[in-house]
Image 1: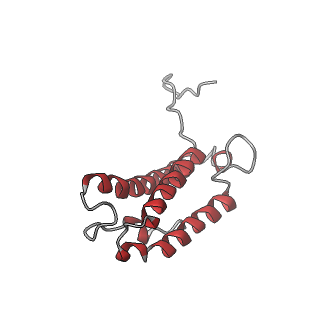
Image 2: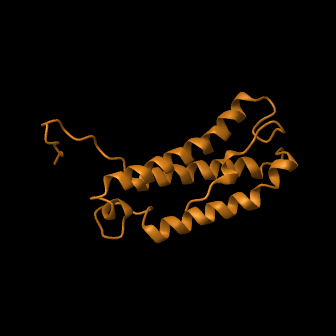
Length: 131
């Protein structure tokens, strides 16, 4: 059933937190693969342990909050935030921003002849803290 605002206009559909989380994890896996590549510069390879740690923290956060779960079960973050649309929007916005930052590294790889692991590329994920 479609939600309708008081004005009679249908409310915009909310994008689920778990779908944003899955996009982030996919981008994390792609970036991790780039950092593990044999042609990756040593200055970037040394970032790998910290990046893997941050991926682990993101997984723990998702597990603790239910961000990786979908549906109307009481354990999904989407379900728990059904009445707090402003918090839901903030969480999805942060996950979308993280995904964009992770994809930016992959995009730079395709635009730069030296690749993602070239010395002139900075890694924007190193300051990410999921909480």
